[in-house]
Length: 332
Image 1 (cartoon, rainbow, N blue to C red):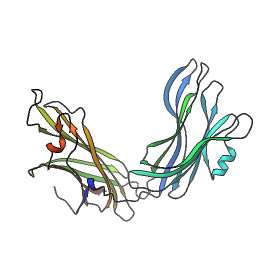
Image 2: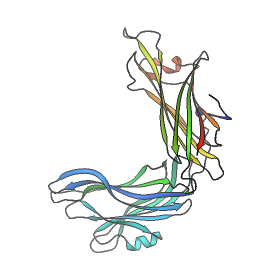
Image 3: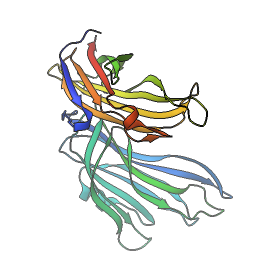
Image 4: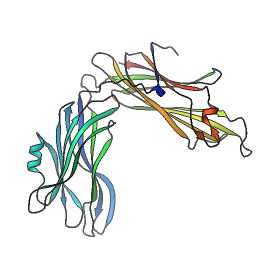
């Protein structure tokens, strides 16, 4: 297990290096609705509409979704799109008998694996006569994993036997990093080791080797480590089980270095000897650094805590440590 320079990161200390993500976000305002047909027969929840844009960190995108409120108590999609300014959107939305969601989305930049942005949104409703009225909205900062959806609001219809569109609609915003075209084809090799050291200094190793594209999250499972519980319980033999899973993600930078994220998930459970893990206590850690190709990082987890069934993990694993050791390389 040859290793280059090692950067040791201790999860318990909460040390997180901040690595810059790409300069451009792909953002979208999205609607998902529960379909309803005549006779009050309900269907699946599906994507109704979306309005997307690509925007640089610190700049703003202006997007909207519009819905027709039907006399039958349901909602139909009317329009979606983008504008050059919030004022332009507000002048054109919504039409009489409709309501619209307008959003200004401003990326703030974040570490790899996450997106962070400010969203200033409002819901406008307009009757058949009269001006549009604001009935909802706020300004919020959102930080979440890339590609996930943050829900802003929910339209609850009152469908009847004559309904034929959507009984309800969820409005959310999604964001991910748009890869630099010059680096979008980059691939990475990951060499991950799980190193478990017991109280006597004895070491057990498990290994995962994989590869992934630029910005692609890659999950792994390093399996289980079982240790017999010395005394019987209820006249039966038991094992304490540690299962280690994780996720890696990398992005090449223009300077040749790599923004790298390593996440660890650890499950500790107590099961009858010979039976699979069915539950347990979960913990883990997440670290972000910038490294050179071939450089190695190690994420150390402290001894497990808590009680799994009748086993006190703190006492049972006193002096034990778990480490994930990762080397990342560029693949040509």
